Length: 142
Ligand code: 5GP
Ligand code: ZN
Figure (tube, protein in one colour):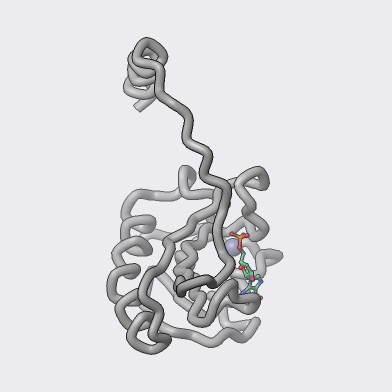
């Protein structure tokens, strides 16, 4: 198994190492899922890789894939346990996005009628010419 970095000062590395307790939902050799200490809704769960990477774009694909692959099973169990009918998968990268803990984590946030959760979603219109230029730039960077 590849050696992944850890940060002794990181709260999620401490949770992974077991030096800070958590309410553990599942664990395997690549990830840990536990209940969020400040839930946005009942059942709010975090999936955390066993490796200290600040943001998703810094992560190895296979470790990120392992975390994402846990989401369907976990969400089914969380829905069954909490009665939530919908849920968001949220993953913040960088302060501007709302990330507070610099160790990659995926939020599973159960949603219910009139739960008061939400975010601003103000769609604009993609200009065709700008879209083509943007597409070329992204594909060049891949
Ligand atoms: P972010 O804003 O970085 O995407 O989300 C960080 C999340 O980690 C927050 O929802 C916060 O409640 C949760 N969190 C921070 N510290 C702890 C902790 O020590 N234990 C647990 N279980 N969750 C934590
Ligand atoms: Zn960490």
